[in-house]
Each structure stands twice: as C-alpha cells, then as structure tokens.
Amino acid sequence: MKKIQVGLSDHPYDIFVRANLVDDLPAKVEKFVAERKVLIVTDSNVNKLYGKKVEKLLCQATPQVSIVEFPAGEPSKTLATLENLYNECVSLELDRSSVVVALGGGVVGDLAGFLAATYMRGVEYIQIPTSLLAMVDSSVGGKTGVDLPAGKNLIGAFWQPKIVIIDPMFLQTLPKREIKCGLAEVVKYGMIMDERFFAFLEESVDALNAMDLDCFTAIIARCCELKVDVVLKDEREESGLRAILNYGHTFAHAIEASMGFGKINHGEAVAVGMCMAANLAVDDARLDDAAELRQETLLRDLALPCSVEGVSPSDIHSAMRHDKKVVDGRVRFVLPDTIGAVTLSNGPMEKSKIMEAIRNCCD
Image 1 (tube, rainbow, N blue to C red):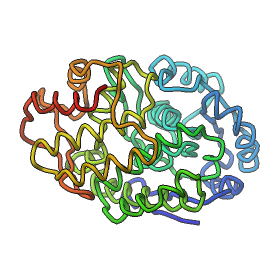
Image 2 (image 1 turned 90 degrees about the vertical axis):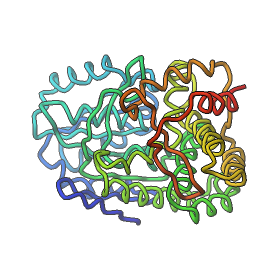
Image 3 (image 1 turned 180 degrees about the horizontal axis):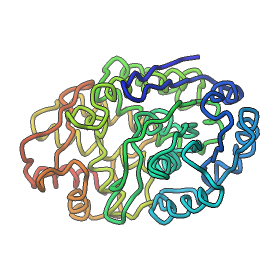
C-alpha cells in the first residue's frame, strides 16, 4: 500500500492508494467517524454500484450512517443541488461533529467538499474517489466548489479532507470514456512537473489502454505525490505556484462553458485545452515543435481528442474572461516551456495569438 503524507501545518492528512483498499475502510476511518453521524454523498451512478457496500462498511465503524444521491453529471454541480444537500443535512439532524463522505468522481468530491466546508461553518469530510480524474487530481488538495452558468467552480472554498482512500479497483466499473478523461489529467502532471513521468507514460501506452491495474496504481500514486508537492508549497494559490495545476484548464473551462456543461467531458476538454496551450506556447517561442508533437502524440495514443467541434472559437475566447486566473481583466495562461516545466504568463498575450491557438484546435 502506498501512503502519501500531506504535511500541511494546519490540516495534515494521509492519502492511501491500494487495490481493494475499500475493504479496509472501517479500520482506516474509525478514528474519524466513531460515534458520529455520517452522511455519504454520492451520485446516481456510483450509488447503484457501491453505495450499499460503502454504507455497510462504514456502519462497522459507526452506527449512524445515511446516504444521499443526486443525478450524475456536471449539470448537477450547482447551487440548487447544494441547497438540496443542505436540507438533507438538516433533516438528518447533522451537527458540527458530523462527517461527510464524498463517494464518487470529481463532481461528487467538489460538491460534498463544499457542503462540508459550509454546513454549520464547516464539518469534517473524507474523500473516497471512484473515477480516475478524482483519484489523480480533484480528491487531493482541498479545492471544493460549484459551477455557475458563466463558468466552472466560480463559487467554492479550500477545505482539506481528513483522509483520502484511493482504491484503483473502482476503475473496473468506470466507463472507458471516463478512464480516458482521467488520463488527460495524468498527462498534465508529466507536462507540468516531471519529464521522466511523461516518458514513462509514453512507454506505458499499451498497459494503460489494456487497463493494467498495477500500472494504474503506480501512475495514481505518482500523480498524488506531484500534486501534494505543489499543495504543500501553495495551498491556497497565494504564490501562484499552484496555478500550474491548471495547465490546459483555462481553455478547457471555456470550452465547457461555451458548449454547455455536460456536452463534453472535463477530461476531454482538458486534453484539447492542453493542445491549445502548447500551440500558444510554440507561437510565443516558448516551446519547440518536437515537444508539442510529443504531447499531441501521447494524447492521441490514449484516444484523447486534440480538437473540438461544434463550438465557435470566439465564444471560447469570450468565456475565458470568466476564468478564476483573470487578473485586472487579463487572462493569465499556464504555458509549457518544455516537457516537465511550465510557467504562468505575466505579461498580456496578444488576442490574435490566443485566437489562432483556439482556431487550430477547432474543427
């Protein structure tokens, strides 16, 4: 079993990664939930597969366990869903000692985390991610939130979990498309921080496409280590370092908002967004053509899109104005300098270059 320590001074916690780890759930979480009311928050898809099992396991650690679901998908990541969850908490008489358990992918983790951050001004929560994207990215680091029609995650809070339980066995029931979407975030980590890891991914394409569980366990653990390294240095995005984790996301969030949330999967949008960012970096003389080609080749080998259709480039550009990295009306981009290193642009980027990068990835 891989144990990754998140040594934040105020909110330290551990991440555990191992196949079949969920079977040890009672022992892993007992100290956090014993004699407390627990609310499992999940979505309609995950609940059918794992809700009863996880509820039964948690009941071995505390007798007061309830479960609530909402419709699966990004369109549920709204204030309206959150209000329903608040009402459920009140109905179940949850108090400040209660614990929220996020069982699901990134949407579940973001919603449940924000619920925990804000219900009664904050209750503890536990992350049990079931999607690859959540395992390698959103379950770690304490970002929570909901979407507005104008953009993703515009309302949220930093709220660290007490523990993260990652069991790659959950991936066996995940639709192949969702696996691919998670791999976009995996490629991101290689691009922004670790050229050797990127090369490992290039060498492991066949194993990844064949769903080799040992390979997935290794890449999940490495992604968590890389993200933790960033979070420890910039938990709340105050220095700007943590913003590198948003490589490709400025474009991706704008693609999602322009198309309508749920029309394209987040990971697919991130893959296209990374291509747009690399294209912009090449045009800005930061990145060489060979590095851009390596990124595109790896994404295509993993059956991820490098372009998007059915959306106007001008609409994508307009939607970028609502990105959280906009400062004084200026969009800041995370751009690669080479494989394994990126920087956050400080000076203004020419609109013509941005539009060209977008057009080059629009069919």
